[in-house]
Length: 127
Image 1 (cartoon, rainbow, N blue to C red):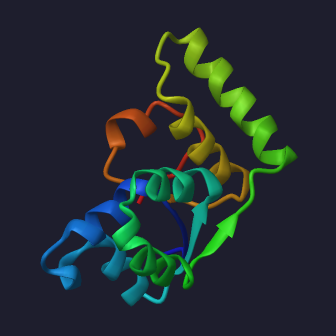
Image 2: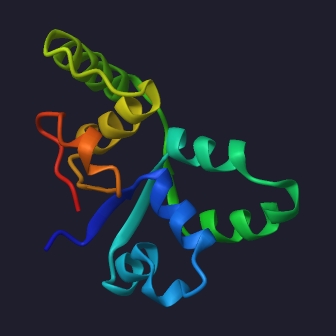
């Protein structure tokens, strides 16, 4: 099993909302000694929707996870993913394309609950 993973925004939100954090996917991933990363886009999605009163907790969570910048190689992958999905008439949200492109550009699997959308993307491995 690959010990490294990119985590989608929904996994962080699930952890934050969970009453039993020990059963959350985020806890399970980190417990498996995985190196966890997050796309700058996914981090933005989480923080854009966060309440100000929760920001200290979000800062604590994200302080333990490396953020992948949205760089030129990710842009190139995102462009190819967009074109593939558009040609197949299977477009998904732009943020999801950018998050998937981050995982693909870094040759890592993506941990997400949104399999329905992400399964459309060729070359993307899901956890």
